[in-house]
Length: 158
Image 1 (cartoon, rainbow, N blue to C red):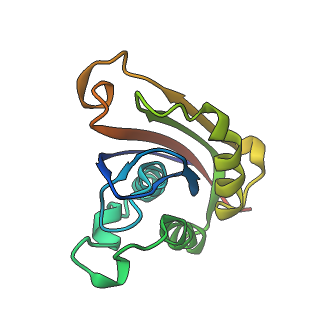
Image 2 (cartoon, one colour; image 1 turned 180 degrees about the horizontal axis):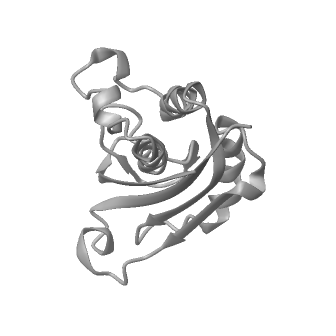
Image 3 (tube, one colour; image 1 turned 90 degrees about the vertical axis):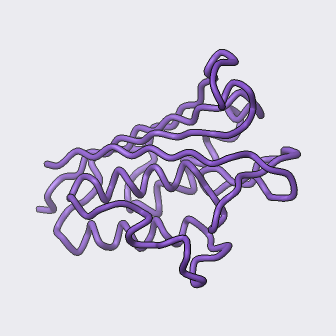
């Protein structure tokens, strides 16, 4: 068994869609980034990669590589999970938290889980997602950005 943790942050900016966990959230701001800037999926990618000491998302999908400009982070997660499976592991479970003041994303968490579970070839009950505020403290509390953290348990395939 292997455990990995991931963390990611993206700045909120105008004129970008807000995509979290593969779901577009109605909001006047979106996340800045080279890809679609899905901070939640990026944190999950880093947790998976970290569990097997495979580096981080930036090493696998550099932000100066035009192939990843505007790409759907679900595709990045698929590629990362393929690396995990090729090394003989499967997901035991995922626990992830979004940290943001606005918008309220709790109503979208079930849809995010439904997007993520098949990408990780796992039942829905193995994917836990939560959202919290930072009580108006720091960059997330001021509405400047969104952070995400993820922890994964990988199990050797039998």
